[in-house]
Each structure stands twice: as structure tokens, then as C-alpha cells.
Image (cartoon, rainbow, N blue to C red; front, side):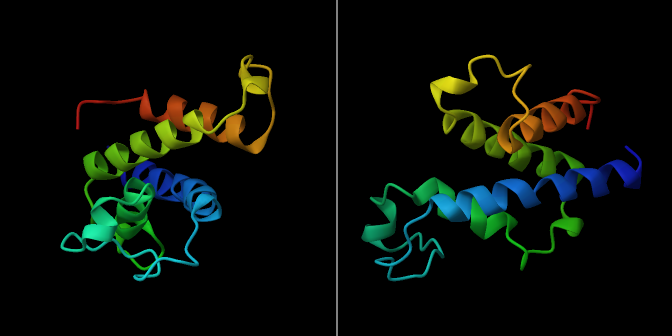
Length: 117
């Protein structure tokens, strides 16, 4: 896969970063959103998956050093997150032009291009 496509994949991570951060309640988090695998509180927290995803994909992580396959996998997780947070109003996603639905269509289209990596 050409480097240009990897750059597009990395760019797509920006939207779910914002959405996931907006959804998180970090006021009572003893680790400020940094998942700690040895902390019982983290292991039982309802935001565990969001923290893990952010810890692997936030702006401080060198995602450009990840393989295309790894980035695609993280985008698939983000697609599931964004999709699961849509309201019933979004049942006709093909016609919806909101930021969430637009990002989902763009990302799904790009991810469907090539799964051979």
C-alpha cells in the first residue's frame, strides 16, 4: 500500500480521538485516562476500552511508525465506537450528512480498498 494511503489512514484517526475524548469522564479517573493494566479500578472501569484505544492512538503516540495493518485495526475499533454511539435518528446513514456518518462512510470506503496487508 503506498505511503499516501497510510497518511490518509493516520488522518482518519483524528475524528475518533475527539469523539472518544468527549465521551470520557476523566474527573474521577486516578490515572487521567491512562489505562493501567495492574490497577483493579481500571480493569473494572466502564471506560476501559476507550482508555486503551486512546493510549494506543492519541497525538502523543507515533502512529506513523505503526504498520498499515495496525492502523486499519485501530480504525475498525473506532468505526465500531462511532457506530455504536449513533442515535436511532441515524438509521438512514446513507442520507445523513452529520460528522459521524460522513466520517463512517469515508473510513469504511477507505478500509474496503485493500485488506491484503
